[in-house]
Figure: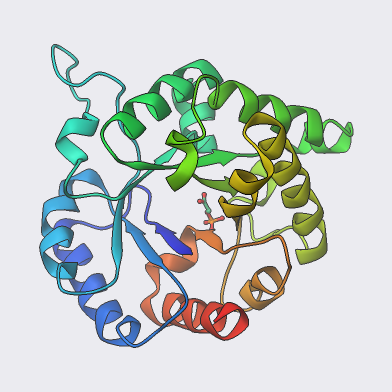
Length: 250
Ligand code: PGA
């Protein structure tokens, strides 16, 4: 999977332009699931644009209640039927908007209830990494975010390992480093669920992934793709990343 997280970028007309640049090139690519996560306001528009293609749609967030007096929020009921995936637990949500593992857990439960596949993002800070706490921090994020999720509910789960120090900084992890950490995440998933489920969950790398380093990540045995921020806004670069992933894994 190569997933584009546009974050708070693109007006609806810019989103339309970007999708129209991407679609013709992405149609013929095999062996890679391409996921676009535009801002909420462009969700309906992008659904229409991609409806006859293999490109999938994701939301960047959801609230955990179905409906009600929650001004400014979007519910999984509203997204179901349009989106196949939803990003949850992104470090920007955790860091800027105070989302704890417990909130992420409620959101994951709400997503699976409405047949939205969660893309659960986990990642350690630079201080945590320097202190040798990466495995503990990531293990706790996984276990607490996935508490009470059954093996059946975990079938569509995707995990994204995004070290916070690598997001938007131009300082990506190395492929080898990410491979080791993602292998550890897979073992943790085997403990939470079982070996077969852990083997089937796609685990992506994210954090300054781009056209120049994507091959290094997708050629690693444990890494099943990438979650791409900045580079996903440039159509040529994103197309090149999807093509490189197709060559490596297809
Ligand atoms: P970046 O963002 O590719 O711009 O580092 C990745 C992400 O936050 O998902």
